[in-house]
Image (tube, rainbow, N blue to C red):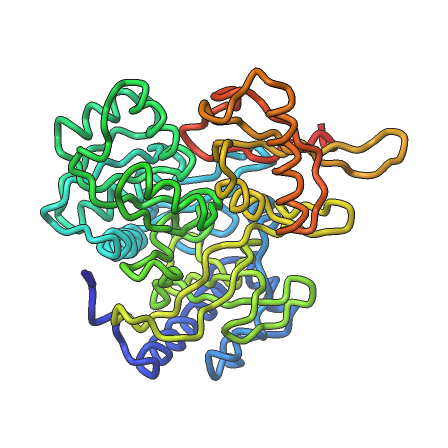
Length: 434
């Protein structure tokens, strides 16, 4: 189902004209209302009159997460405080939190983006949506909530955690779509098995999953155990939250709601704008946001814009499934690898579960970085025979070497011994920073 055909199926000419008008207005507005951006634009020698086409966005300076932290809490506010209706922010676990401030129009745009997102997964006003993203300052729960209300669907706002109750409510209220992180979807399936609940007999038809990188292999595993289609969704607190991009029924690439949030792909080293189809860092400009608008925000997420048109009928451009983040990339003996690549290989190996952690440390003698992959053995694959476990360990090591070109120390751990998360899973433990 296409929620808003007028906007989601615009001609490229009409869409670009709309984006240009909104971009030009944004630059003029923030120059006059946000001292931080006035200083930044002056330093770059750019005025709103210099923006003569969409391509001129490349003249504008980038915004980074450090900029958001340095301007905490209200240094990027572009409207009077009295116009702000809602505040969300990141956890701040890695430093000062980043803040998103929303006007009434911003909340309308957020609701619109999420209505399109849920519709992409088949939701309608008749749907019963179980929202298992966390509510609060985290944007996940409220974003889905607003989108479901926009659709006119029934919402079960259970939030994250309380897993047994999640499953009971799915059964009792006949939920047909649920939302959460991919890792929590697998954990719920584990718990259902222990409770004797056959989740394939529930009324579920689809899952909208996001808030953490996940591989295609993980999607296949989730779809297999739940018996539903699992859709990738994308958003980030700095831009608005979930609803920025979403998968349709084709399940190849996420449609960007680019009438609201303008995407670019850049070379992360040089800042050069890359053409559609080339992999690089995803950058967003919030061309309609009023509360805390951002120009050319560097997400650190690595992907590319799919150049082909989608068969679903939407004309908005799609971004490929995220490969990871610049700051999540590991360099193991000179080889660059993302945790999601390791995950994608793991889910194809018989005898292990898709639960793992990567422990990164520095050898005090050689001063080289080393990585240990802790892999949870499945109940079926677990054996008391040392030779069986050694065979499995060697098999994992050889497959990693063959498919990714990396040599990892493999540690097999008992079933269900790796911590489960109701929110974002913590896949990498970097002891070099401890």
